Image (tube, helix red, strand yellow):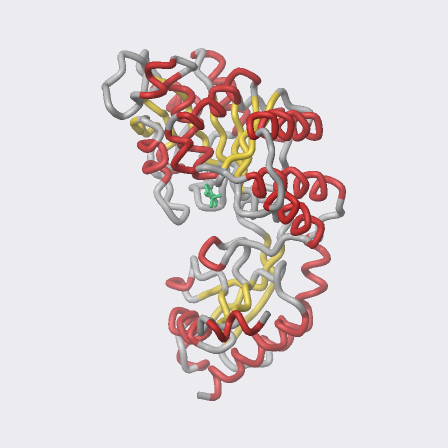
Length: 369
Ligand SMILES: *Cc1c(COP(=O)(O)O)cnc(C)c1O
């Protein structure tokens, strides 16, 4: 299929950055691809497909109810809308057209008010919610979360993500206790997380996942949780959900991807360490470069190769190296969140040994320029 790259003049991309939307997230297994094709090639009674695939996923995950949506972002917007509309037919059809005499505030720890590629606040607004921050940039306790809740609170939103401030932050379980004490629902955005049961078990009312990240499904999202709340999310199909419609291929593809995800042994962090060892040794042979294994800051079982630059010795800063790697052919993408501090990370989950050699060659070339 390299003819497609030629036809549209696109570059080969090596994705050493993880499940990045900017690069197309992931490449689903052939079995998922087949299911997507089956979905594309048949008609269904869509309501039946939504309900029965949701029931199937709910049984797999031992949760009350589930629904496939078009993305985790759509899941956030529709979950917020669900907690404002709460099944009311008039509010469903006039979500943004009128002010409603019901709670619309979404309370979120301030350190969770992140930009994951789009601001989480934009998704809240899309769902008709108004964002209320609890705590401070560097801390949010259960008491601080509780203090932000009032009669206008529609829900609490907790973002479980490496994007968020991690220190002095309450846990999902803490947030669930606060939600229960104040009788408001708790929505957890776990878009890139790997455990599809944990946050529900910890007391979240709705949990949202991105279909193509850990699950490696087609572009899609998953919302699971309490029966009635999920039904309210489904109802948004006749509201804002229409602007974020998921197709039959996405519904079937993600459902199958979830099943395969639960069955297969995940590549462990230890296996990633082994895979990276020659790569890290090669990097350490370059002047001005220090490379070592680091573990995921959000606590997932992911090991990455951290590369620190001594810009004077290497001849290039970490930031400039990121740009040059991206501009190469193949284009090499790494994690550059800490490039301003002089280090980058390579995530090897989607990188073959052959591609690791190519990345090492690209780094060597930078040093010799
Ligand atoms: C990726 C991500 C999202 C968005 O997921 P999409 O499926 O791309 O919409 C939302 N929240 C967090 C924390 C994410 O990492």
